[in-house]
Length: 493
Image (tube, rainbow, N blue to C red; front, top):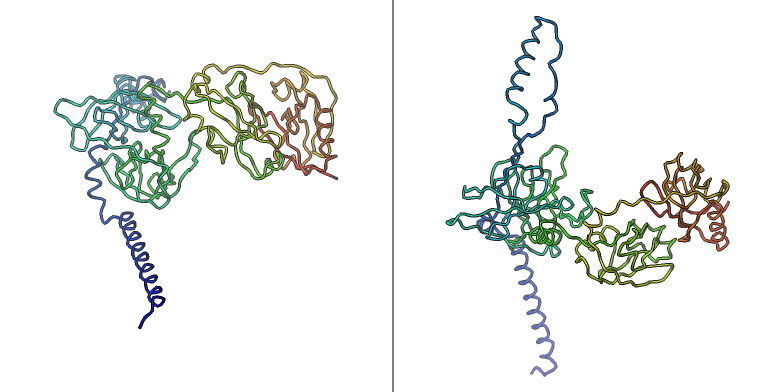
């Protein structure tokens, strides 16, 4: 006869088996959802909200050969009659008689007639007409554009008996590599076309603008798909199809979409104000490399290194300085430099936010009241004052640099327009400075975050660091209009 002890393991095995079965069913359900048998029901629901956009641009200015005169050819030459007919025809047509037409895609976000597309689809348009999947078409007016994210908003006025379908925004941050996506658009002007694929990658920077954070997909995207929606399998817009990588002009499975979480605030601002109103911090930043992190006393590379602070900017008024590393903004960690501009831009103008920086081996926190980027861009036209500093040329062998003072002669020779610093006149070819790209005309304005005004100041700072057995030194360099930090390893001889 089985005892109570004998039954306990059997009960345990039964519970474990039930849990295993439940997990298998859950996994099966998840996989079925991730790989539907058909996208047809989804497409049927979404397609009415996707539009084709036709843009007409009238040639208001003379074209590249409008003002050409008829070339001189020998009288009686066979070319004489040809050129005469050609130029007579162009004069009769006139420069304003021609027009250019292009096509793109878009999607309706509310039934009152708001439509989202790419800025480059409608850029320079004189007339915009929107075509719907049922064959209806309407003229559209431009609500606003944002070239920095390549987003534009149009408005149509539906007729009394016309009902528009719209699609909702989704959370693009929730999209993961491998998730199914569906693209609907107007490739090559063929009309509504559906393609499917997966999210190939997240956070792509294709150097198209300051806020690049593209979703990469292998869903086929071709010319004419621009401005169309990228859907998840819940029927939500998680991206705006914007660009492809191709050596032939056709799709090779590398397409890029502006993520919804970046586009949606832009769309909201364009609808509300007719333009964007982005947060402005007022700093010039650069990437924190492993060597820079070492020179700054950081455990690992992270954050955005402040290479310069704009005068009278929110950052400057709050106490942020050149050489600080911004590691957290408004409670969000800054893992890499290019994340900061996007996060700042998304933050409300006039809002006071906490900013944490790494400064000389310690974390410090400041409260910064953000300005408006667009207003600042119009106002910033200040130039640095020009001064002169008397000193003598100096060679800093541990850096492999020959330095000269900032004089009228060196300013004119190298086109320099800064107040203080030491100008590089020669770089030793086998030095660490040469490897790091330092060159004649660069102006060293800080050494290890301490301002320098002469070559002698640079030499003193380097000597003090060398006495501490440091392996590298941090230079702040002015190069043209740019400032950048460069970590240079010291030559100990």
